[in-house]
Image 1 (cartoon, helix red, strand yellow):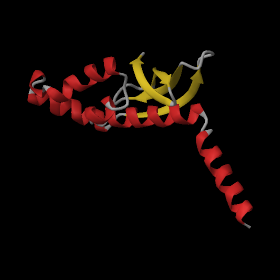
Image 2 (cartoon, rainbow, N blue to C red; image 1 turned 90 degrees about the vertical axis):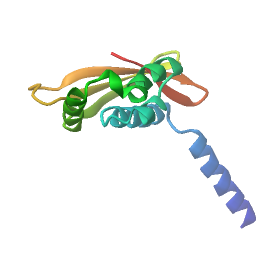
Image 3 (cartoon, rainbow, N blue to C red; image 1 turned 90 degrees about the horizontal axis):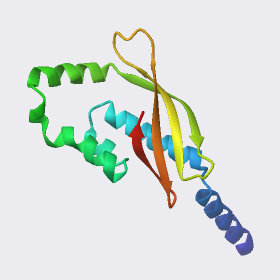
Length: 131
């Protein structure tokens, strides 16, 4: 009985350690996109490489750059914006991944195809750029 429990525990640990990279990448992309398109820039920046995090954080750090009436219109437009992840592709070297998604914005008529590029390192994925 003891051996069975130990074997079961080892199997569960191994399964947790072997999470497919595509799932990790998708989870980070969804988290980033949700935060970004709800104007939670601090949460979005937490999913980014340092270079992109600095750019994403600028809007949150200095809201005075955008006039109040424009900021309100942007917030309203963002609340009506949605996204759908289409695919997750790991590069051959497994150091980066591309997440293709459709962005639906108010009055656009049809979704806009977009891509996130994520850097993979040490079991973590971080958004590096938006294309």
